[in-house]
Amino acid sequence: MCIPTFFAFHPNSSATSFGAAKYAVAEGNKEAEALLKWKASLDDNHNQAVLSSWVGSSPCKWLGITCDNSGSVANFSLPHFGLRGTLHSFNFSSLPNLLTLNLKNNSLYGTIPLEIGLLTSLNVLYLDKNNLTGLIPSSIGNLRNLSFLNIAENNLSGFVPRVIGQLESLVELSLHSNNLNGSLPPEMNNLTHLMILHLFSNNFTGHLPQDLCLGGLLVNFTAALNHFSGPIPKSLRNCPRLFRVRLEWNQLTGNISEDFGLYPNLNYMDLSHNDLYGELTWKWGATIVEEEKKLAATFVEEEMSLAATIDDKGARGAAIDAYKRGMILESKV
Image (tube, rainbow, N blue to C red):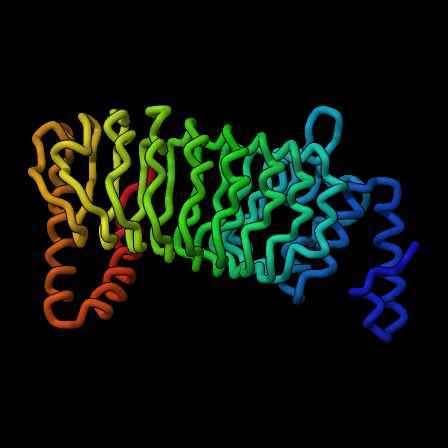
């Protein structure tokens, strides 16, 4: 068996022997071997200390790992642990029964490997709040059992691949706070089970998908701080469950009196800094909590004050910062 590169760099023979012994213990369990190889690739001693329980050949007992009834790894969840490294030493093919991969809010960097598309049983993929770069891999279209996909708050760039439309079971799609650009693919209209769609704070252009709420299930929809143009999607009239809508700072056009429907549960809506006209209606948010209205009023007043003193480009940057502050204050759906 080949000695992993991580240990090959250590001239100290005892360290190398320890590494080889650790792999020998895991030998015969491909899932354990794959996880230990990834552990060894991480950058510093902090990572090794956090994963100190990752020894032996029984990953079901390790921190962040749970197994199914057959003893196969089903859930891999290590959010908020400060892990630093890449996903490139992760042997995805060795975890065929993985249902959940949750590595949010760590310090992962590098690209999302194409091999992630081998996790065809995956139901939950959370890689948000890291430092990942590069493109959204086209192989993500193979993850057709995904219900929750969150790769927000990274440094991803490029277009949203058309294969995203193959993930027809998605309930949550969160792409916000990246450097994504271009038009959204029309295949996104296939995502009729979406309840949460976060697109804000990117560089998207073109029109919003017209059928994004064709299933009538959308609850939380944010597309603020982009460069979207054209009309409000007509399908939003069919979204009676809408709770929160944020479309500010785009170039959207149309009559809001005609483009929106009845939203008895609406808690927060911001359509400012667009080219919209028409009247607000009492039919929006009959149950809005007074405290939320005060928060919204204060937030808008603050932004108007900022925008009055700096140019439009500066105002947009200030709005991005304030928007992120507001997202912390707002309750999550």
